Amino acid sequence: MMNPGSTRNSLIRIPTLAALLILGLAGCDRNEGPVEEAAEEVDESLEEAGDKIDEAVEETADTVEEAADEVEEETDQQY
Image (cartoon, rainbow, N blue to C red; front, top):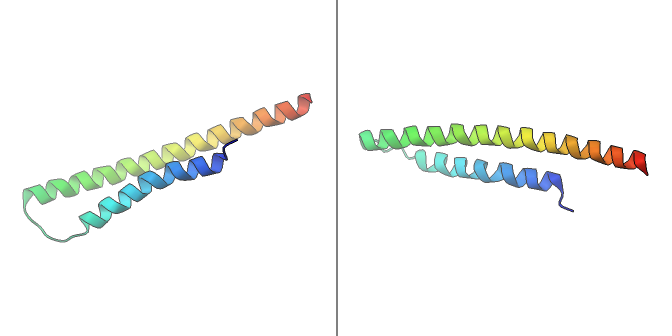
């Protein structure tokens, strides 16, 4: 049986690492004109999207964990 916590951690780590990588690349302070500005806007949008994905994954994981606990409790009561 897969540990629900490890799946949740994996789902959270991937977007977080991607966002950190993007931030690291965006941290280069070389203003090269409108292309650079557009890239920074894309980076910010991706970071915001990553944050929203992290929140959604956490909420989903919490809901699934609560449902699993309820099923386990019901199963324990039947036997």
